[in-house]
Image 1: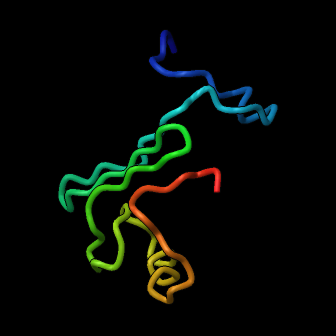
Image 2: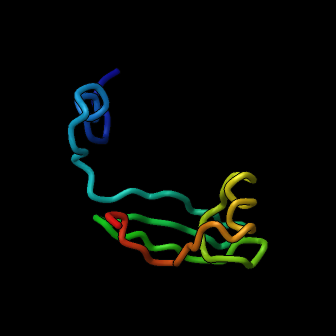
Image 3: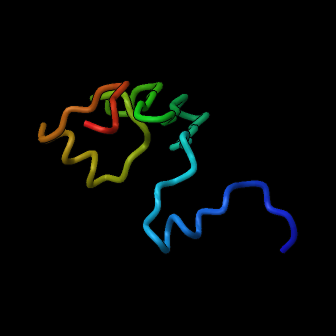
Length: 82
């Protein structure tokens, strides 16, 4: 396969070790002007959903229904350790 640009996550998956990554790009949606990025314990969410119910990323219909039922509160910036 040759040289691959990235990090080897095999031991993370197989041996249940901590990830060497400190950032993760969840989504960039140019059509809806939305994005979500995690750096360390914080997540930055930009843009509003099509339903204008919360700032967040494009999610599966089941997740949208749970949010509409008011069982969860999503804020644009959250600490992932809490």
